[in-house]
Length: 281
Image 1: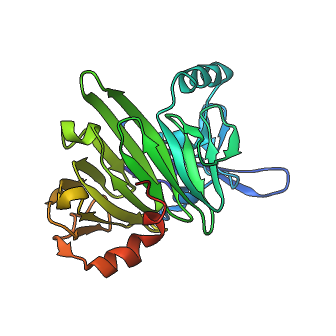
Image 2: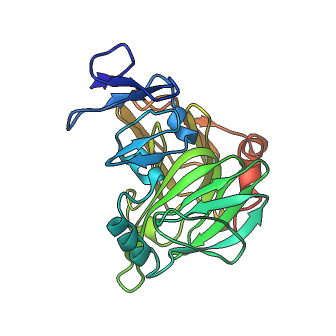
């Protein structure tokens, strides 16, 4: 694992015609780049050839930046457009304030109630914004204000009752009610955050990712007072919660999840209420 800074020999530092410094970060295959600040959680990315760069000239390698930067070539653009337009994976049920989606072809539009969403969509809510989505497997998900998420994967076969669902949640408060996919296994419905992987099985709950990537998640009752199960995993270990209003917090991907603690219903509402108001019934 490498830490790349302007003072190391692993990166290259160049200046443009206006003498503005640009830092180019590269990593050897199989190695990671570790940044001193989690600026990428809300960064705007552009492609420069095969790489990703920010307007300030930082070029991180990695899956997150690659997704947020959009298609790499015209061929990939055409392929992603074709794939995305085959079938939507969900429908916007509720909208509050400003909510934008960046599609797989790189276009950005304002979302409205009734709009379809597709695999690969990057959804961003503004100040006071929120969105609620019903997915193909009947799961529901909402994202509160100043949030950013990627609809990374959704495959569901209702006949075989098999599928996989993955959301990349980079920032913001969210709530969810699991659907058919989550019944097939604890790893079938997953929410990826900067610090933890959340495996959901037959449950409802809420969570939040703050500006530096720290995450909190709590489980709640579903209809009929049923409580499912959520497993939170990091590189250092995992914890499972399966009682109403149990919660876990995670500060670092390298650290262990906290011991389970209990939220009151009021604390749950205060933490995730803005997102919960937009959660489809």
